[in-house]
Length: 224
Image (tube, rainbow, N blue to C red; front, side, top):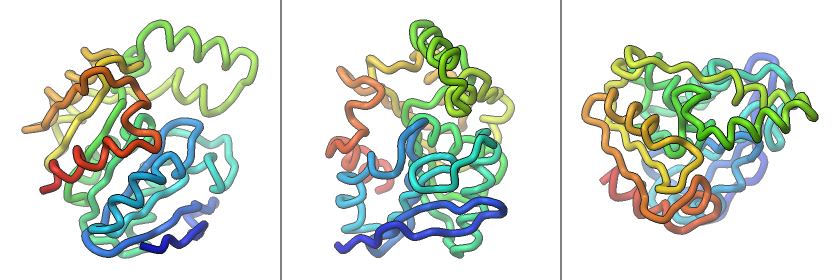
C-alpha cells in the first residue's frame, strides 16, 4: 500500500506532521519521547493492509512545529482536535511510552471518542520509571535543559479515579525488562475496567516496538 509522506495539519498555533496510509477501520499511532512516527515504519506497512493508519509526529517532535510548550494535556488536546478536523469516527489509538500516556489522557477525558485503546511502556507518574532511569533523565536534563526531558521529570500524574473513567476496551502492554516498573503497569491495568494486561517475556521498553514486526499480531489479535 502506497504511503503519503509528510502531510501537515494546523492545530491552533502549531502544525502537526503526519502520514496516512491504507484503507479500513482508522487507527492512530503515537510515538514516544524524543522520537517521531518513523519508529512505526514496519507496523504502518503491516497495519495498512487492513486499516487506515494515521501516524503523527507529536508537537515538538519530528517534523511537527518545534515548541517548548509541552505537556501531556496539550498533546492530548492536539490529537482530539486532529480527530475532529479529519472527521475520524471512533478510531483505535495505539500509543508507545509518551504516546501511551497521551492516549490515557484522551480516554480519561473523552470516554466515547475512541473505540479501543492500546498502550505500551506508559507510566502513571514519574516514579513509575525505574530509579536508574529517573537519575539518568535528571542528569541529562541538568546539561541540556530539554523541554522533552523536563516533561518526563514532572509528568504525568494520572490517578486511580481518572483511570476508572476509561470505558473502552483497553490493552496495557509492557516488556518484562521495561524501564517502567511492573507495579506501575499493573496499577494502570488494574484501575481500567476490564483492561487486558500483557507483560511480554524477554522484551524491554523498545525491543518489540521500534520498527519491530512483533507488535502487529498483538494489536491485531486484541482488535479482533
